[in-house]
Length: 371
Ligand SMILES: Cc1ncc(COP(=O)(O)O)c(C=O)c1O
Image (cartoon, rainbow, N blue to C red; front, top):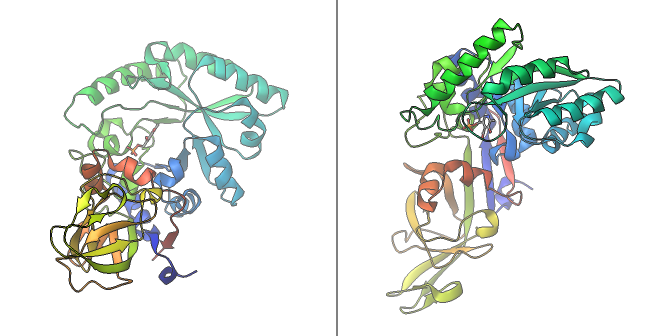
């Protein structure tokens, strides 16, 4: 199929993605681990992994072993770190395919060590310590003992050590400085004990950009590489651009008489004869069933009216009389001199831009450009 056959699709600019990687490297002066979990933040895991490695990242960070498996199955052999938990059954795969695992507790470490030894090989691991996120990782206060014991375990090769910040996108919260102080003190002890692995990393996008002391040996951004601001107060510097556009088409245009109920539940009634368009996007495409949605048609904003259906929704075209059947409709992206960003949608849905893009389902065809 070519792009003109689709009625609802994503356009993804891999050239812009590579430029964002370049910009991150320029600003931080550090190697980059591109975090591409959750289907490459909705942009497509395999294509994003390939582009990330072509764009010069050192490592791809994923959440799950299944994601590493999908990348390797496509013949992509760059370094991969699984940032989340893993089950012991994955050991043959991670050993054979040289995929690194995160170890966040001693019990898991012992299980993986025994599995590796029984198979006569080694698993490459990064140790995770918790400096205040209170998610995965051994508390930093117990981190030195954890690291010492990991290093003594046969079958494990400790290549990295890391932590994660809870509020780096709230630049002025003070929490990141506090987490960093705890991590730095711990790192001092680690260095004195001669246990510092070659790769220490801590910084997601916001920390990479706004907390230079937290860059260590490698930065670990996700959202910034997709050209999206980590938060309203953590805005990307110049030179980053969004790489995704979400488009659909106008598949019906009708004049509907005054007083007519529109869509399921008749939540909207026309106040006069209204020109109503149907666009080929619905909640099964990730377009939420909430009030206040709007789209771009012929460079103008068109409000969505009535409930969003599974595959379609309706828009009011009274201000866009020039709209015609088959017109391209923009949900995220630019048309003329107007734009709708993932951040705008997040704002209108009462969520974060991460959730908007990670929620874009597999159903949407992804069309890649790599200029
Ligand atoms: C452990 C870890 N590191 C890095 C990131 C990247 O974060 P961001 O997308 O905010 O840059 C994430 C994302 O959630 C993460 O879980």
